[in-house]
Length: 180
Image (cartoon, rainbow, N blue to C red):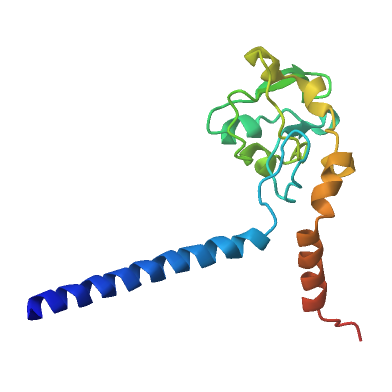
């Protein structure tokens, strides 16, 4: 009779432990019901990219001196720089500059090491096409400034969401005024 009694006690303890674990899981699940959704509906809503986001490369033809530093620092030797040497002015004259974004890994080395700052990273990340040859951008396509997503009407729902307002209030409350 004593082993049967210990078996019932053990069974009761296991039942209570299982009910406690189920209750803990249910509490966690119910605590998530009051949260705002994290996912966004991409084609209709777009997230705001960070200031240091590495998107499509922007190229300024007038600033480029055809030094080919961008080609040397690129891990895959991607930028194609065509130039000719002008003997009368003793300088390189840039003829063509192109980057194939189907191959680019967006490391940002070309932008970082450019001595004239003619390259910069934009916030444009929608580069998908049906033909891979359309991803080869020449200097005309690279010099095109992207449309800012900040002015897009779809971004308003994300920027003005209640969670972002709460975060904004926290950031304003945590600041201290140091003007004397």
